[in-house]
Length: 177
Image (tube, rainbow, N blue to C red; front, side):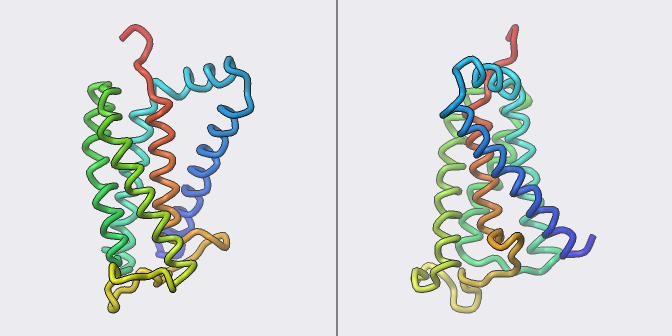
């Protein structure tokens, strides 16, 4: 797979993640309780597994971009990775053991990662916000690629973190457990 094809795939997945997050929020805000309850009943039992898959794909994507495409991660990218990568084993164990209680570990990690990603998006858009956090040799303002007019690597990470939080908030025990 070429880097161009891979970044397009990652961008499409990020847009899909954003659509699920926005759709879930809209359903929660404007739909009747029964409609949201049916949606949660549909998604909730698989919420942990789906969150694990999102974290694994995001981790694989970041490794592809740095190790195969040779996009050098900046310092903020490393901080985002520090919160995404551990989500893979945490959510994998949570999904395997159906341990919904592990949300108390995973949600804060994802929220912190999302906050770093949001700041990174702002730094990309407004380079004057870049501080001493970033390395001059690998600036946090560097945009390796942009898809659909707005999606960059930190924006895709933000999409993944937001979807993980959404799925974790929806996650429930399966019936009969």
